[in-house]
Length: 218
View: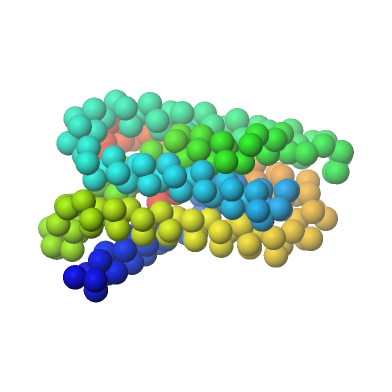
């Protein structure tokens, strides 16, 4: 019994870790916060992201049938994510246009925990991602849809998300001296990445407006 519980915990952890490691708006923001502020604030941001990720997983576990019949809700979330990414890209371009060291990046002024919550809420892609995995795990008899297993699976997934974001935060800290010396270049690169992520989401939304497909960029 204990071995099975440990197995379920680590299955959730590894799935979430692998899904969070590809470069995306959340882990890029965690890295940028670590550089612009400090690692502690980046970890506070990661906690906010993780809380919403856990909630989304709970929704996927318990409300799959409802969301599957209300695809319009996912559509609204995806539009919100695109708008948020565009606003962050604009903020970074504006920051790059100012003299280095004169002002802080405007998008980083918000409370980091709240920023993590908002960015994660505007990124519903984990829901279809977890739908796919849950169906597979239940079909493979790894998950049996009881409360104790669900709690362990969700906890493992939350830990996996936090570890992934923490890795990006510490990577940003390691590169902080270089990034601070080349602040304008970093701001332009960050803005360009957010813009590309927004365009990617828009193109994917345009081609699949009513489908629950998981984008590799979270």
